[in-house]
Image (cartoon, rainbow over all chains, first blue to last red; front, side, top):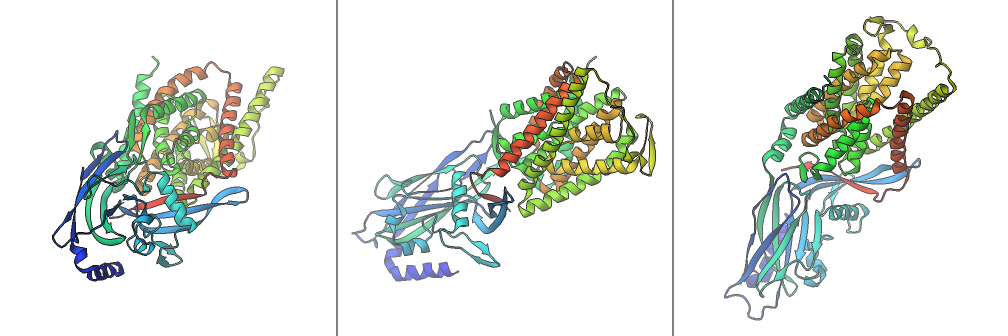
Length: 256
Length: 305
């Protein structure tokens, strides 16, 4: 709510300049299917910045920040400590409704695009993205160098699920741009939101949104949904399969 | 060939998993055990979470013990009465085990408990079996007779029952307790428990060797089928695709293992098995004691919306 108000305020303050550009974007594929031999994929996002009559003639080169957010989920980060000579999970933090996949791409380093103040407000860079934690009954994000927060980002980055790259967006012409969105093999299933934010001369001048979805198809999808929704029937089927395999083996290898 | 496992959410090489199933099947056929205590650690080792590994291995063990149980049934080497009493305990134990599994998972201590159980159980059973095998080997070398079997305190317990096919007269109390214990451990650790059950039945309950393996297989079969059902219904962790690959590899490997096992003498077999169990236990112990490469772990609590 507060962020929306800020955005409105910003638009009002910037006046005409804020409505001077239009962003037109598209992704190469709006529906990614996870098949049995799926081992990762790369989507391409491309678009252009459309100027109109109100655009100031002396507009400096544009900067773009693309944020891709996967389906949100609650996650727990746990820390091990040595207790009685062995390593045991002791402390933990719960992250609430954080993106299961998060990628931030820009055409140049994030700190070069805009001021720290605007970067924080627009959530530019992994350090500035809002990751809500439950801290003793309260809901808040913590400082970027918090041990749990940085461990969380580091682990997600290791799995290829969180990433930031200050050189992934390329401008083909001063107004035409493209970027790749790498999706790892163990990509979460669901709807992905993409936010494209336009900056010029350090100021935020507009954004647009698009989305794509990742779905499991065929047998994989069937197995995963059945397991989750009809656990009992799924269990019975697995049991039947086990018995069949065992029975067939005893027939095939029967010593006569 | 890569295959995407729907529940483990992980692409794996089919041939690697098939080979693992066959290798464990070979060992299990050789020693006449289910092999869960090898399969679960191997799956954890290739990156499958301990929870999914434990739940999926249950169905794999069910398949291999069913093919075993069928052949023992044909040879009339199963005691139905003894199996039913064991099962009363087994089903109770499995229910308790799956419930504990769910609780531990919510607390974030499941992986630790799985590792700890492996350390305690495998090092104990492994060293007992190893030393017993060693002693037996020495005895045969010296040409001495094995010590005569005597009745122990267990045979003084009330509620006695006659088990006809095994030709024993035994209280049902220890039998039910053993069933509960095996069912509980099986559900938490992803093991059939044959390698603990068989020695207990032979040394403590004095069940004759003619019916011991067949009867223990029936207990393994039913508890593992039940564990599969419960894990599927409550935790949604059973990966049927993974289980199927393991089963196919496992039952095939077991046939060759059984043939190889017949060529080795009983004492040597026990010695080898003890060593194998011991080394798996030690491997888990080392992992608990050395500092993990990363102190932090993440667990997703399910995607919403």
